[in-house]
Image 1 (tube, one colour):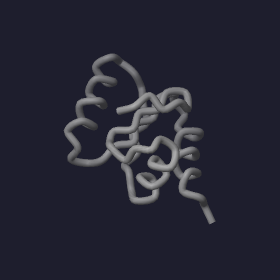
Image 2 (cartoon, helix red, strand yellow):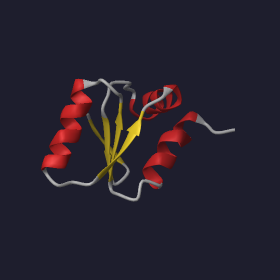
Image 3 (cartoon, helix red, strand yellow):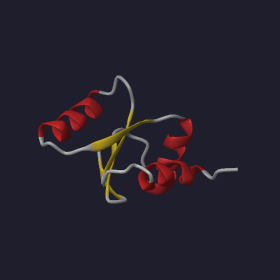
Length: 78
């Protein structure tokens, strides 16, 4: 059985790129963050957040707001 935090950690470790964006469809802040990364030419992996991800992000960061942006495994905010 997978612990919640592992869902997020696994996505980060297996992303294949340094930047991972946990995002939610219809979230204007998520779209804005993703657009800024694209405009800057920064490759990233977008992960659509489900209940397990949201719970894991709360455990790891104390926050459930989206987006949740990680660079080289470090949470930088959203």
